[in-house]
Length: 67
Image 1 (cartoon, rainbow, N blue to C red):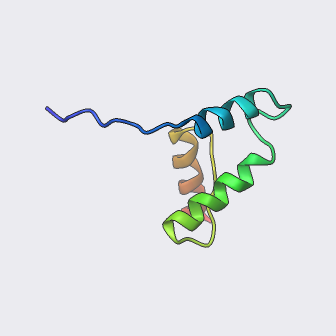
Image 2 (image 1 turned 90 degrees about the vertical axis):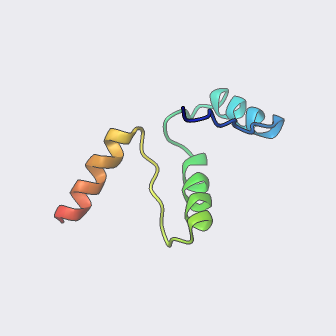
């Protein structure tokens, strides 16, 4: 059996989610570019694109490969 991995969520993470939920922005907004840049920096990439689901990620990948 594969052991369950434990997540590490601190109060700052919880507060960041609460702040977004209480803002006028839920699915788009100023936090998205910040998140994309943080992911790009973390993986050493020039760009990163946030999408809404794994399916959307696969669609974007196929579109990029077809272009």
